[in-house]
Length: 393
Image (cartoon, rainbow, N blue to C red):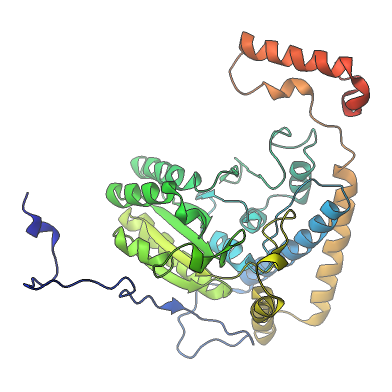
């Protein structure tokens, strides 16, 4: 095949290199921090009902994160990850979809599940790994999932959900469904090989998947300028021939607008879209992280002024859809409900030990059964070390 078929640019006769930053990528902004919209901004499809639902989800998210970090510090939880300052990305992305669309999360997208209706009880049961946990206590905290809500279970390993999302969307295309798959990940995950494999496969096979990158500035303690030299993650979408947009990830209206347009395009054309949402991780990477070791309070303060929840609140007030009395009542109610839910979930029994080997095979193999018997024998030998199993077997 002639190489000329791949060249849609001008032909030159002297060496002409393309600069690594030659691709200029605009950033979509609709809503300003004071609650006003930019002149001539193209607003998303949003009414009062949807706006209030989004804001209630924001409030739930903020209070939930606050209380779960406190619970971890009190020794009630082993681990937790907040999305402080990034709530608009996950909530706005989910709000721009339809219920039949599949959501594949990384580990900071609890807001998407909250918007879909994952109950406070289900969140608590997962975090405390009790007998009512949908995952039967097999996952560490924050690894949520819900078949009913079309939300794939979170996996700790970075970027594995990206090629999985491509494959799932390919199945949606083959079945002719009015559905897409959205795949959330951070800019740090975009350094994994799965990112490149997933995007290239999606572009070549032309599947209805939305790759949603939360560029929050840090991969744990590594800042973005030490992760890559290109123009963010959006430039990579262009390189793979994928329709791409960069947005202000703290602007709920920009996130919603971009996702709505991306979904319509992906369904109609059966092609992928890459959204890069520019944001900042105001909190620690996890409760095991201390960000003071790699960034300054001054840097954090600059981004605190761009709080996405405050920005939306200001907009709602200007629409006469919200007021301070509603604000106070909502946050007080949420704090009471979440604290009460903690007290209930933490005293529910742990899953029966036999559930360790169920759901692997239709009938547990002899090898698995032998391993389980060994565990039981060990626990029976040292019962004082495993009080939570008393009387279980």
